[in-house]
Length: 369
Image (tube, rainbow, N blue to C red; front, side, top):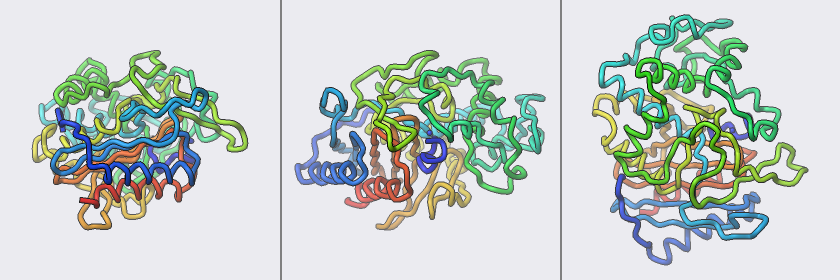
C-alpha cells in the first residue's frame, strides 16, 4: 500500500475551498496533463492548500475510459497506505488515554498470537509496529504476481495475519526499517482487542467526525463501490494487456494498513490538522515525528510513527505518507505552516521515475508560496 511499493505489490477541518487565481490553477492543471501525457494515466487530480487556508483543485484526463466522462473535481479515490496514519493516530490517542503503552510488547495485548519463524510478540513493541522496525514480514507479498485475481476477494484480518506468519522474520525487532503492511494489521488488531470496537469505528469517531471530513471513510464489509463522485481506477498485471476497470473492488486486504477512501482536499485537511496538533497531545505528536532513515520509501525519506518526512527543495521538511491500492496512487504532503498538496492518479506508477514525477508536482506545489 506504499506508493514506493507499487511495483512490489502492484498495492484543516472545515477549511473553506476558495477558487484560486487562474494562473495558479492553470499551472497545476498543466502539470497534471504532462503526467498523463508522459506516463499514460487515465486521470490525475490534485488539491493544493495554501498557508492562508485557500484551496485550489485541478484535474486532467478522463474519469471513465468507456464513457469519456470528465474527472470529478476533488473526486473520491482509494488512498491506500494513507490509512496507516489514521491508524497510528488512533493508537497514539489510546496511549494518551492509558489504554496502551507505546513501548509495551505486542504480547501484552495479543497473547500467543504473533508467533512464527524468528517472530515472537514478546520481542516486538507497538512503537516498532508503527515505525516498521518490527521485522514482521509483509503479508501483501502474495500480491506480487498479480492484483486482478483478488479484485473481489474478501479477507478477514486474521487470514491476512496467517499469510504474514507463514514467512520468516525480515530482521530482529528494532534493528532495521523494513516497510510491512503487517505492522499496521497487528496495530489494528491491538486496537480492537483493547477497546472491543472496530478500528473503522475509532477512525470515524476520533478523526473523521471531529475534522468534518464528509467524504473520507473506511468502507464497510463487502462494500465494493465508491460512495460519491470519483474517477474510475484501472489496472493491468501485464502492461501488454488492456487496462481493467477496478473501481469496484473489495479493499479488505488493505484493512488498517490501506482500506480507506478520501479526496485530495480532505487528505490535505487531515494532515494539516495532525501537524497543527488538533488530533494528538504535543508529547505524542513529538513521538510521532521521531524518525528513522527509510531509504526504502525514498532517497532522503525518514519514517516516524505512521508519518514520513522528506526535505523540500525550497527548504524545510514536508510530512505525509502516500499510498497505493489497485487502480489508485496518491502522493501527498503537508508542512508545519499549513501548506499541503495531494495528487492522485488512476493507475499505479511502475517505475521510480514515474513516482518521482508525481512527487515533483507535490513538492512544486508546496514550494510555490
